[in-house]
Image 1 (tube, one colour):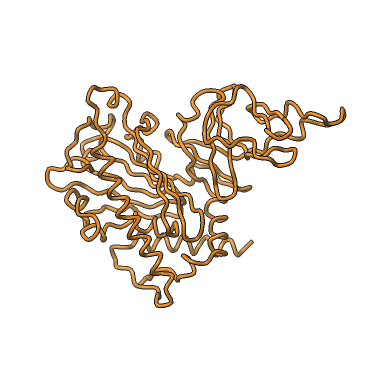
Image 2 (cartoon, helix red, strand yellow; image 1 turned 90 degrees about the horizontal axis):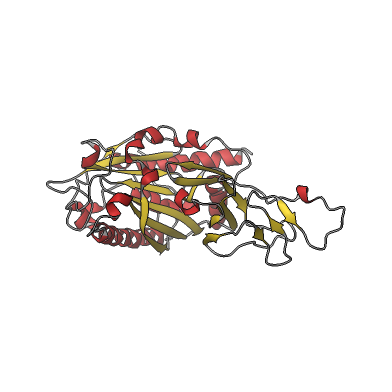
Length: 361
């Protein structure tokens, strides 16, 4: 019978550092949305551990990403979380200036023989999936398509690239990031912890897909007359265009490792992006996306869904913080998983596999 991971996986700072390197620097991570860099010069910053990455659209319309590091003396080029560059990036320290494609344009006070072409901004691999922007900070990488596997086909009907942000809420949770992933991938706690959610969906009704080395998840249907996940289960928005009858009657909950929690509803999309800050601290960005045609309608309402999930989120964060406190105790020993927690056991195996692989190099 599989059991939970030993305490060191949730409390050891050195193991956290190695895990972060393995998961967040050696794989594709969700960074944001393509519409946030829709026009030339637009940018946003992505903070990954101690690294800062500028994601931008260059003058030719290409999506690019660069380390936020000047090639002169290493100064951060930018501190604003998002905005627009007017045709160039300039270091605030000594004025080194770069084109939006990363080429060094000017380096004041350098000798005439200085070779500017040898000092472009250092690039970070960037790619997109259906409106979501991904980064890869590692040296050796497989294509994003290989990490996503069948998901682009599986979720094509939701047409995620068409959806637009309506609300963003930031949370700080005093817990290891893996505990958050485990909590997201089981609903056995729902009757105890989420009475509002449990009224809308059968906590034993999950249809889990096969777990892989890069993602896991499943779908859950609605109870009774419920049509969506909201305060009362009533759907006040049109179905997302493209969904068939079966897709209109369920919610898909998937984790794409390491930081992308994707929840696809019949009438909206919710996304959680995890950003571990320490072995026992994780920042979470939760976003709700709706179809722009729906948002343009008079009387458009979204608060019923947002309030429902904000309440559910806070219930989850509180219990996960209690889990973090518990695994730090000398009394904690790994406990057994039930057969209905197979996704959690599968994720633990991914963690162990990554650890073994990293020790081989």
